[in-house]
Every structure is written in structure tokens, then in C-alpha cells.
Image 1 (cartoon, rainbow, N blue to C red):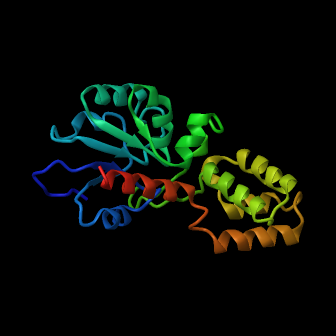
Image 2: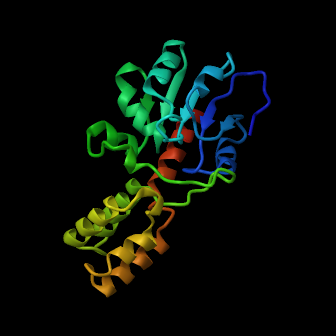
Image 3: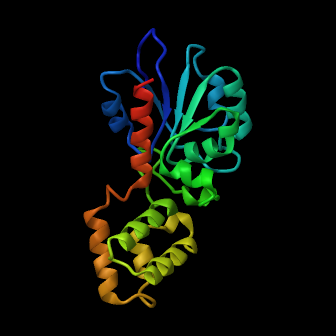
Length: 222
């Protein structure tokens, strides 16, 4: 959705961490230029009036992903660039020393070295609706951590499930597939308890979504 306004509006690259419709509602009544996940060269074609860019989601294929060099060039042009959730969190952790800002738990996980691979946030999504078709590893990791803290899983069960998740190809990763693969290692009653826990708390366990909302709330206050 392109916002129509003579005044500079923030540009937000988003989907599937948070739907573009939700982003528009969160920004209302403030206008924003809401765009699909960022691709290589997108920053070069922004309106000259652009002052603030929020990067939430981005394309991850090697020849399509926005590069650190592109973002660095945009920062040097005077753009304020803030990242969270997915590609934004990854690039913000890489470029924070050069002026890119990061927001949210996933950014902090990258910045601290707790996670370091782009595989943590990779997923597949419908190119038409921008809705996710798999679950990112970082969300699974967070879900397992919460389940352990809430005593749904033991530390061993948490670590076993995380190991299984890490070994699943990211387009196939989701909670049903994870639990299917875990059947030979985890007791059936534990699997069912964890399944129910995830279903009950699915939105709360969506760390990418939570971080995306944090970025939007932050930019609204600028």
C-alpha cells in the first residue's frame, strides 16, 4: 500500500512477519509507505523525500537479498534505517556500528551472538498474500524456551526438540512436522501437552510478529 502524502512518510518493508493490513492499522492515523519484503536494489529507488526506513522482512535468496553494502550506502545518504524481526534484525546486528538501528528480541539475539545464522529467520511465504508457509527456527526456539519456562517441557525435551528443528529443511519446518519427527524420542503425552500449549499461545509465541510490532511502535514515535 502506498500512502499518498506530500510530507515524508516512513517506508516499511514487511510481510510475512506481520501483514500489511495490520501494519496499516497499527500506523493509523499516521501514514506510511508499506512495501513487500525488501530486495536487492530497493533502497536505490526510494523517493528522495524518504527520511526513515523500517526493514522487517526481506527476500533471502543469495542473488536477491539486500546487501550490507546497499544499506551502508543508504545510511551514508542520510537515511535513518531501523530493523527488526527477520532480515531487518540480521542486517541491523551486522551494521549497528555504522548507524543502522535494531529493535526487538531477535535483533538482540543476533547482536549478542546467541544466534548467528540467517537460517534462524528463514521461511517460505506465499508471494501473492505474503503469508508464511513455514515456521522460522527462531520462533520454534522461542516457543521451546517458553514451554520449558512454563514447565511443559523438561530441559532435555526442549533441547531434543530444538536439535530436531535445526535439522529440518527450513521450508518444511513447522510445529506439526517437528512433533511428527519427535515421536520416537519424546513421550506421547509430552507431545500432546506441547501441541496444546502451542495452539493456545500461537500468537504470543510468534516472536517475529512481536518484534515487528515493536518496530512500528518505535517509528510512530519518531
